[in-house]
Length: 571
Image (cartoon, rainbow, N blue to C red; front, side, top):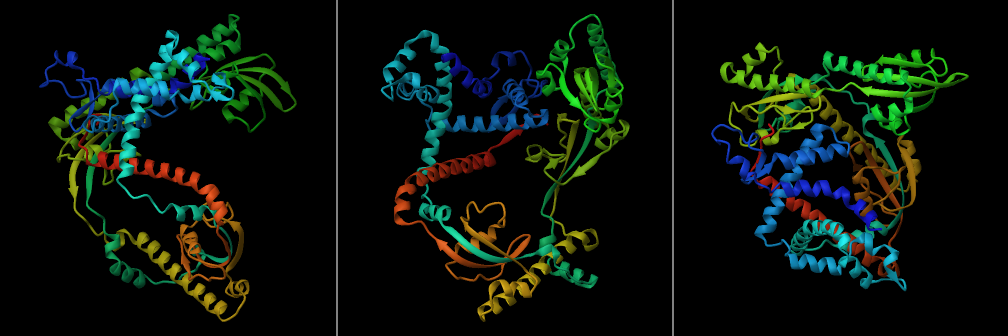
């Protein structure tokens, strides 16, 4: 049983190891290196937080772990870096605030607070209750020391965070939880009219657009920004990578011809995760189920025949026809994915390093021209989905990054400086001006129509008929709560904000949302009775309290990160 518990906790291990290694300083290795020669990265430091180093080893461990979870290399790199930034900030604060538990405290927690896996296991129950004497026997068994060391690591990580969360929560006033409880338990029935804003026709002239631009200049101004130039070295498999993959496919084919079973080779070599687990079994395919390049081969095969290598954009296939039935073919497959080899990646990285050296002599533009690279610019803090805010922070004009490997390329960045606030010319943003003008005008027109409906209803006209007379869609919704209204109800927060303020028979003012405008009539509002509140409020309050605690902790951590001095030597 304890073996099962060990398996349940292994997901935590690679993460915990990465966090732990984040605080190991590579003193012995650094003694042999001259700080005047080696860069931070060469010293094994991938970044710094308030002067505290983040080691390359811990970073690489976490990157590998995230990639095992399915993240791409660049996503895993960003996730790993920010995880270690958070861990460094937290560890530093824990030490300063003396929140780190002592060994004696850890032992006491282990004794009195069994892991949930054990606490929920009925094998430890006596007369329907957890038996702490049986739990004590497990603690005393030397064979279980490995498992409890893992539990100890979890406690060392969780307890300071718990203490910090409790402290932070004690510094703020709790929210008005009764109001939140009522929102989740008050049942409404309402009828409403909705106007889809984009369907409202608007006539306008060029002069009106220009006049609107002049009045709304503040909206169209571009805030101060940073200019970054960059080049990209594409990462794609080379002809040599393709040649080696073909050789691998031919080797597999020779093993099949020598008598090695197809399914065994599929399990060993196939890169298709789904069919690999099924020993290469793809199943019955019909025309249209697979790509044309494979389809022609599949439907020309005879039973038992093996074909390959078959080249596609993604890689190479080796196929075996297991059977043919009518217009279907039963197929086994081995798929070898065409990927970038280590050698090819290294060659591209060497080019990026050479480019950086050239920039020192010739400048960024000429170096790019000499290597036939396109120089692009951005005023954003992101390039192709990559966050470059750490590179920008504190950068001086002319700063050049280290090579930055991403999924499809290696980037080199250069900081060009800060740009002041600017108002683009009308001719440059005419479409943007037009879109905003139309959006505002349509909302005004929708509001005017709904006000006319309101006037008719207040004068005694039936709500549904009043909407119909103006060509506005009528809807009714019964027995819903505003926190979980259901799939067929509006998604606009403004709708539910207005409804929450209404009582039976109230009629709303026009409610302006992002895509729709509404007018609402509250037919019935049923709040929970005293008995229901007494029964369910305690659990609700506890859950809300926990959510509030987590929210406060997250906000606190964000503020710590925002104020920290973070150096990212990956760039």
